[in-house]
Image (cartoon, rainbow, N blue to C red; front, side):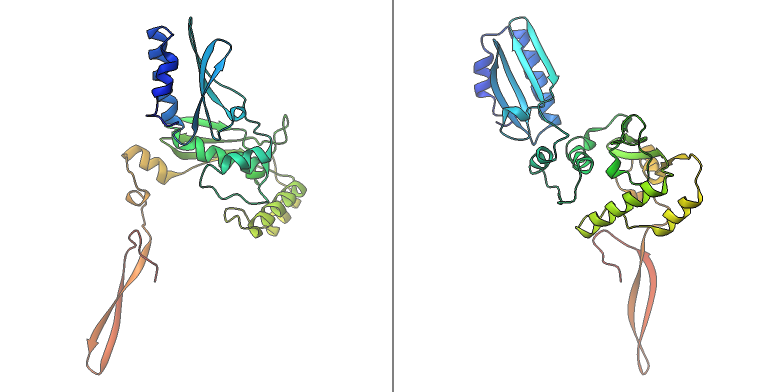
Length: 268
């Protein structure tokens, strides 16, 4: 059922008070704007009319629901999806145009689902914390939960503005993470890192407890200047050589100069 296909829902809502109907329909529009690529399922829930959103056609995958009763409307997010189950994550990601590899761990699958469903909705300044360890190969694992790291990202207007974390200073742990990254790259993951033997060797000499934050100056300037394209704010745009064939006595001469590389141009 799509956002505009609400005929059956309106019939089911008729027995309930008008104010409850209005609130439920307003929440429905809000939820549809958040999750336009999910399915809306209508069901009966203990004398409540309930309808929820699922990335599949199964009730067990409903993660956001609205329940309408005679005394009011309830709205919330449910734990209908086991985000620690890799097969569940792979099934959910089939609904989106996302490349999934056999080497993808739980953390990477969770990150891909986050990027497909949530990242482009982070308009207000939002800190995303406790990133999975397998997608943060340089960050130190949390003492409370080794499956996540001491890391955060700041999002504003749907863009990542800053990335900060505690540095991993254990050479054996770092070597193991680099090996996992190298295996993922061999399997086809272009964003995975190479094994950096020099960095591991440097860690063996020692690294004191270290933490840092990196801010994307270009994206920050985009935010401050309300620019839609990063090419409008970078100081030195990528250049290509512009070649001209000039007729000269006795033959031709090739002359060229640097010119801005436009979108769609190929580098020469």
